[in-house]
Image (cartoon, rainbow, N blue to C red; front, top):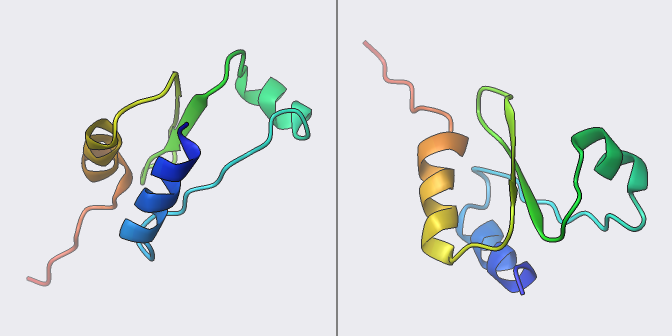
Length: 79
């Protein structure tokens, strides 16, 4: 359900962010490290490197808001 949406966002933000899909049945150690208990769970790692877990699926506009506000590095301007 979320995979096609993430694929769209991956193309839309290509070169700006990286979106990975992880199979938690295969990557059980990774799931354990982050305490993932339900599927889907979205792990956001912002430009500051701070991870945030969010269980559940979201509409595209919510993903875009999180990406724009929290994941993209601020644009540096020359002074």
